[in-house]
Length: 242
Image (cartoon, rainbow, N blue to C red):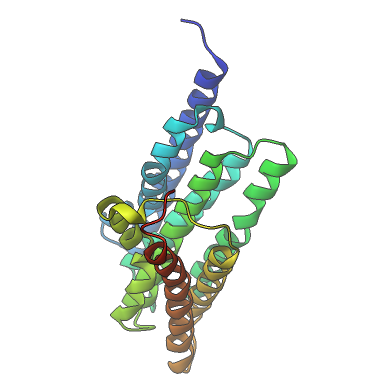
């Protein structure tokens, strides 16, 4: 069998995804044993990686030339960190060190721009890399929303923030006029930045309950506004040719 460049890149990606999955599993086992968590917490450890990979798979198949770049190592490492944060959702905030959870979440957030910078630096940016990064951001928002809710930082309404991307995905696959390219804009990136920043800050052990609730409100409203702008634009342009 002749190993083409595309085949080599796909194999490299598979090897690194397997390594990231193994690392997530080991971290999950360590947290389960250290804090006496349910083994269901292992779903949190490997879930973010699996969800992001599945959501981005269609783009990978459409653009095989973009299946691998060194920047993916940073993206996959972010998935490992997000998995560690997600595992803590099975623990009570009085049992686990919430400051450590916040620190790991902050590191995952700080690395968000590194993979894109590295891809541009090495001239290896691709539609697949951008899609995988975007889907991992969506999982991160979901994980943080679950933590904020289960740790009683805010009410169940904060889950609207975490579910926004997946509600959009359902609409995209069920409403014909939703499935069209969106106009270029920075509001999506800025909305995600504000939402993740606010949700990460919610994890701090605030003495005043109003602070995390207020931050969660900012995250939910900002992300809802960002998705709402795009939804209104699609509605207004539903009859126009693509």
